[in-house]
Image 1 (cartoon, rainbow, N blue to C red):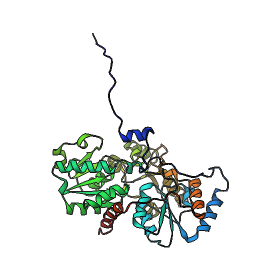
Image 2 (cartoon, helix red, strand yellow):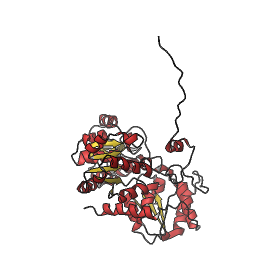
Image 3 (cartoon, one colour):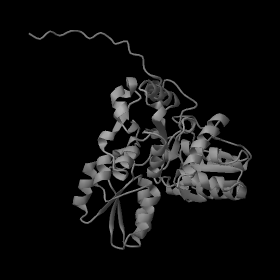
Image 4 (cartoon, rainbow, N blue to C red):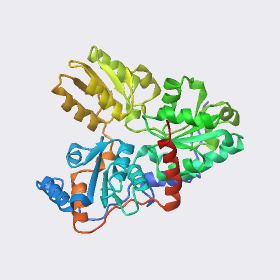
Length: 395
């Protein structure tokens, strides 16, 4: 006979993060869901393009517009330069005469631009809710707690933090304060080589896939050399022995776009398109990277397609706005470019920057009203810049 018992209600208190996700509380310092003041033009306004051009022309050299590769075409049209996050931040720093830096990207990118530009320049994000799910996966409090766990395991003094550019200013500052460096998807191996010259282990934040792929694919480590620290579990879900035995301590974070690609996506596209070249970003899962023909950063993807022969076929594992733009660009050269997965996958937070937000931003600035300024406090900026400077000094 089966005895059925009545479950008693559990006394579970939701975490602050859960409350944010449920919409029950707000964090003005979060990259998630901050209100954007002001009245936006209607998306159906037929004069949006003309209004953007007029406001930009009125501002002249006072404004410099940065457009990340994942932005919509309607926004890229008005960008003075395009590129990945770090390239754009450096481009802004090289334009000291521009009073306003309008960063069409996401929050952590605008923070990096503020860190690298002068105090006289003001960095503006057209929509403050344009965040990054990956950057949100590592908070300063969580990382400080992780460091305490490493200290208790007796390995903090031999561990060097390496943080991906796709992280908040707070995480970059933590990295600088603890002797670490920043990396991009292009120079991750150089950063790890440097880190292992400084210590025995690396704490890699916040993207586990870039850390794992670089360690295993590019540096010859094994998957057993890597452990994943889960900030939502006691001690990261790891024993002290596991931490002591690991070379790479990977933060449990990922890109919501690149994490969607699967081994099935690769196998399916090879069946559908005979002779296709599979080219993916290193933020993809390890099994996807292992099955791909080419792996590299956004800039690498673009350059590879530029150098590809006419008639070649390519399946690209990265954000859909960029893939569509590349497909249109290279169609005239008889290069077939398709999205790796059948499921449409835009970066939802990157897509928050649209033409109405850009028009509102430019018109406000043209009228002398500063909106949505991104400012990093001086202490955070100092340590974050230290970590960035270590990256810039890499060979």
